[in-house]
Image (cartoon, rainbow, N blue to C red; front, top):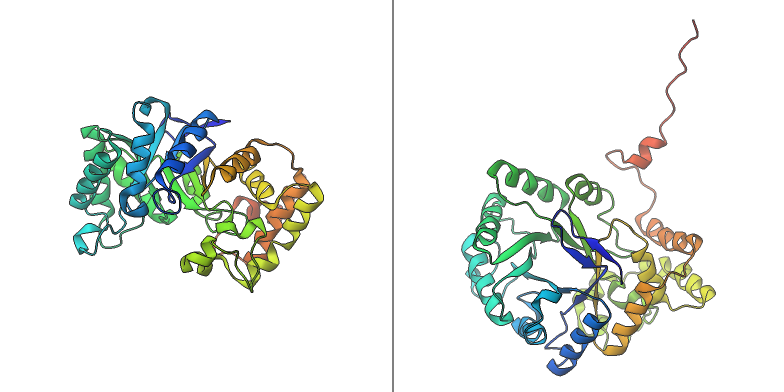
Length: 339
């Protein structure tokens, strides 16, 4: 297992982060604890949960599995999602954040989180209030660092400047969806986090299973997220996505590896990704995914085929601003006349 420094935090985290969204739901407690224990044996030291995962059961299970082993892991949880129908039980108001963090710590059975993510943007609460809440939690010792998840680049940049002006801690990491057919953060968020030294943790590396090749537009694999969660189907099940991955599926076949292995190796080839969240529903998936992430078998040509899938979806359009790549394509300056 390889490790990376998480943004400006100094924390060393494994390039694979164990996702626990299925724990206490699709995966029962006993199986979940075994998956956590095996992940630690394989060198995974980064575990991700959230207060809304399986109505808090995920945090409870993670706490049971890590009892007495807190020094072995970097633990991340999240706040901001709705935990009840009460309007005051969602969002990123300071009072809500502080209350939800206390509840998370109680479920986990620990006195602090290494990372607290603000799970979703809250456009009804000022960024200043969010930064103030995070500063309060850091000062109290209840969290060591904080991050954002699913926020746009402009909010990320503004939050950094608000923190600087207030003499408060700034976010050290952002967590976003990312895979070879979902790369909306490339144009603006990537340059933003590079500028401010913010780490990038990505989720959905297999696009909810689409990149495994087990789905078709006409039929989703039985028991899969597409079949059980309409949100995943809306996110990924588009004709253009199915068409774009055909070359990738062919490349995997030629290499003699599974499409999932190619998808994970593509993720691991991106140096700007600090860690990728691997969520599983059974031990065999964990072993296969970790093997895929640790393997180094894919050629640059095969990775380029994966990159082409996004270009096919994104299309060839002229952006409203110049990137480093587009600047390099500008005409050279005119030659100076000789004297």
